[in-house]
Image (tube, rainbow, N blue to C red):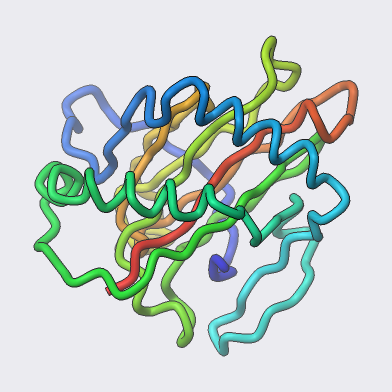
Amino acid sequence: MPTKLPLSETRFQPPPWKSTFPAVILDEFLVVEEWRGLLKYTLSREGQFSRSEVVGADGKTSLDTSYRRSRVLFDLSFFSALFRQRLLTFLPYLLARLGVKPFPVSDVEIQLTGTNHGEFFRVHSDNDAKNSIGRQLTFVYFFFREPRRFSGGDLRIYNTPWPHDASGRNPWFRTVYPRQNQVVVFPSSYMHEILPVNCPSRQFANSRFTVNGWLHR
């Protein structure tokens, strides 16, 4: 579970010459039958989702709706094995693209998240708590009903593991817009956030869904 960190209020878009960024995006990550099956599974488990919590630096979890609002499911059935296998298959390519040294993967932590109207996740990193320091890479896979019935929910990734630089300003960032059957992978130490979702119907089935998680050393 991601670690809660202080919220930075000012944002700066990267200048055009800032081309290097520690994130890899893969389109068409699953075949059509796979992501449609995943969506069907997700919608059938609506009643099993629980409210998302955050983890403090001490490793304790708590509910903080001012910092994170969404619903989460930890049982993905056979889809867990599917994502694990697919991620490990792409791992050499991902490491090379990210400039990260190869490491032995001890675990692949996976969960399913639904984010609906007015929900969000403030700026945080994923391996700053004592029970999450083994997380090396974070992945976020987007999927949803078509036609899409929500807007927003952009994933904003900062190119630093710190909330701001030595001058006190916020770091440069990249915005990843939710696209069907797309996965983004980046170092777990880097700051990121989910911008608010706008879903007028407020129906669970029309949520912004992700399969997200972490590759552990």
